[in-house]
Amino acid sequence: MRVVRKMLLVVLVLCGGGRVGLSASEPAVTNHPSVGFPVGETLIYRLYWGYIPIGKSRVSSAWVQRDGEAMVSIRYRTKSNLLFDAIYPLDDMAETVLRPVGLLPVEYSRRFNRRRDSRDESTWFNHAAGTALWTNRLTGASKEFPIRPDTRDLIGFAYFMRTMPLAMGTISNFAVVADSGITTIRVTVVKDKKIKLPNYGKVACQEVTPEGSVEGLFIKEGNIRLWAANDARRLGVKLSVKDKLASVHAVLCSVFGPGDDRWVQLADKKDAAVLCPQDTEIDEALETPPVPD
Image (cartoon, rainbow, N blue to C red):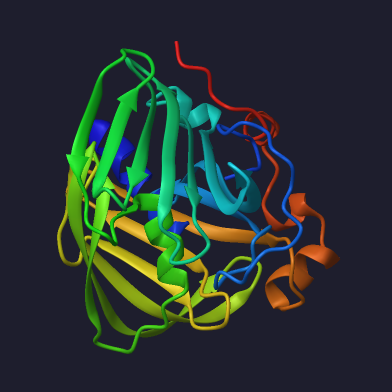
């Protein structure tokens, strides 16, 4: 089941849920620059193990202030349902805080509480000095390591990809922090394909295949596929990770927030529970942060 947990983490960070926080509360920012995606957006994904629903993830963005500077906070919150709780419970949250220019991270934090494994850790980025500092708030452990001028965290990387229209056949390499160190993720744009979503019908997408090592899970060519909508939002609408032991998927079921395109128009017309079937325990958990044992 440890492989399944790692596969789920890869699914969540590359699909890039709610506005519940790891960061300290600061005044909202009213005047801000364009960053390439609508800040204030909330995405709801349903998670599947094969064809079996096992939970939900909510991913959202918001403007925050850090030391008087306007920055973008992106957070994900995921919770497994009662069925999967009996096998391998998931109760996770992560947040990245990005500078709007270049979308480079200032801090990446994550907190989760799982069977025999709880964590509360952060990575602070100092691109000017070329270093990052990882700390574990539960054990007091820390590690400093060198980074490149364009090094990103996993969530920030997923959102940065939304700002980059990629031509068919494009192969790009990115330096990403994972496992308190740096890994290289290679992204290939494979083909155009229409993906059918439960609420939005067939969506024209680009199929992208990442390769690299994330959270100790080696991603090789073909065992992970991401479909990004080929429109202005460039949302990750579906992501699949396959392994010999399991197949895990995240499927977009609703979009809320700013804008007047079809993604949010549907949410304005229909109740959230209709778009993404309600699960009271999960939906309530998505409103609160996990508390490590």
